[in-house]
Image 1 (cartoon, rainbow, N blue to C red):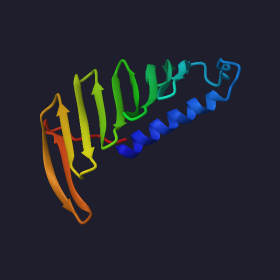
Image 2: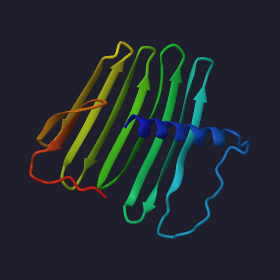
Image 3: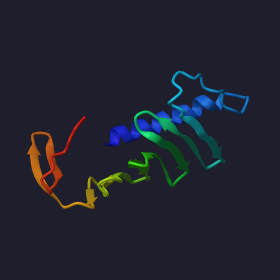
Length: 170
């Protein structure tokens, strides 16, 4: 989870940095390759001062087979306070989001996912401190059970909904 969230934030930062070198101040029209996919960049911005800043990029449009979608990410930093980033994406059928924030002596990561058709959602929050303490909170609109595990490299927990429906992976 942390690795994917960190990748997302670094990817978004790369997009903003790449755009920063452009002096014309606007995005070039994209080349049409498939008329049914009409996703366009809707936001591309940044602001900063001597102690902090933020940057964001977002896109929206029609994407086969999902229909109307929206996706966006952002990063932020503040001297002596924190830095972080996040990503959100969704359609009329589903939504997901995640983000992280790093403080001088602790970190927080959060992620959530939801499905409109089944009116189901779940989220996790993970907090840690440089003293080696961790806290994980899992919240769901559906009943679930968690099973602890013990591997040679550490401890684990796996949580699964208890409604008898197996998790499908694609």
